[in-house]
Image 1 (cartoon, rainbow, N blue to C red):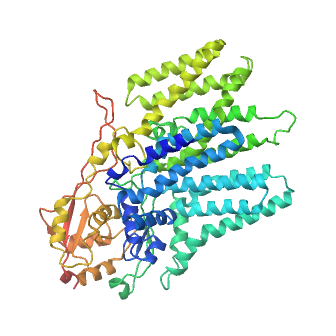
Image 2 (image 1 turned 30 degrees about the vertical axis):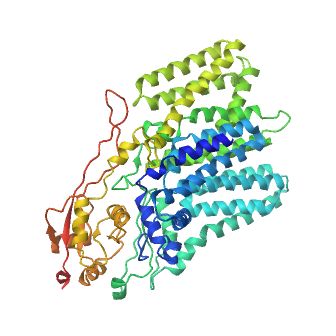
Image 3 (image 1 turned 90 degrees about the horizontal axis):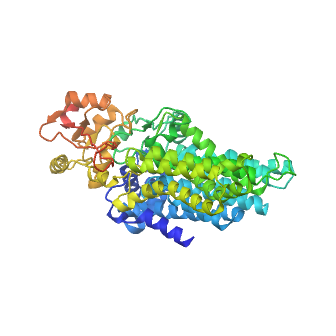
Length: 620
């Protein structure tokens, strides 16, 4: 197990000190959080405490504390993700071993370690590593509550789920139904006592869930306003299944010149290499997660986990019990399947989301693979061709190999055909032959076949010395980093030279444009709208006041950005600055096939914008 933890530490941290890019929006937020306690608590996007990101602050608190101790560097804000990623591997071992033995625990930990989405997210300052660690710890405390029959462990478990809510909102609640079900089935207490305990657990969950949102809405809500920022964030952001901006317009003259600590939200979960928060668009349906662009991050071992779940539930069944009287082993398999199923369904039915969210599927898939591999082998040996359990292992191998061949084909066609042929041959021989000498070799060959591709995908971030700020892995993540020219040196040089003491370096349409300049210079940049430009973070009247008082002297209008009242006013009244108009940006990379290496090449696109000078006299 120590070797697996060392492998995880290597994959998640190797050459991370060479990484020059992180998620800009969280990095900017962390920079602002270090300015004051108020900014720290509210996870303020800017140093003036007027705008916050679209997620609760728990994970950002950890990153800010790391940056406070080690100073602000790319590696220092990623360090919590690395530590929690390795911690999740250790927790996986602790969760599986007591019920299924050390072999299953080690295999589950190894499967989690080598999941591409886990590796990528552990090398970024995204929030998902914190979420996964918190949920796994909650399950560990739930197991203690069941084993020791102690209420305090149950309350602690649900409290951690509430804490996880303040990491990634309602995504944390996907495991609640199965937690309740397993606790109800596993505890040896009267139903009245179970109901009482679960009621107290939900009360604890409600307290830990709402403590931060209520603290924001009760202390940061502007006078004469009925807009509850944090609670509306929970509803709007999750209910619409997309990143939204919530506006809280300031209307008083005092707020024009000195913004109050009124929190508005601006999206921050998009990768650093996207100038716009373009989520992964898919055709919703249960097959959407086995498409190449998504499946290569999470679904490598999904068929094996599905067949393993069926085999595990059948293998650990006791004939003298009724169907609803589950053994301890069945309860644990149900626990992981109950995490996997709602998470899979929620992503399958969603039309668009960020691909790195799929890391939510990694723990249950890894656990089910680790738990049921030995079970499938035993069922194969103990059954004959008249028993359906005999076919589970061959089917698990061939379906997993076929799916992986589908994933690999756009990059290495020859390897794809080799995997397909090997998996099919092994499964056919396992079904048709019972020679003991050949069986062990065939099983080993089949397992190696389905392990090679996900392992190679997981190695690429460490080999390329990049973090993959999308939270996803590709075969050329280094090229992605090299093409990521988010800041125009020409534009920056001009703005710094002609700033003339203005409070803001410049203003712009969106936070996506502002963030890299804040990271690069440390100077405040005003984003007049949220990340996805669906609402304003400042009113036109307030913006005019900033221009009138000389706090904003330049506005950078990105070509193609949605028009707003402020943008239209700037284009009408501002003075165009010629020769300093181009800013190079790079959207999400798209694989492009080459004939020689069959590896994806990146085809960055450039967008331009127009710089405007804003004189205080234009407001008169």
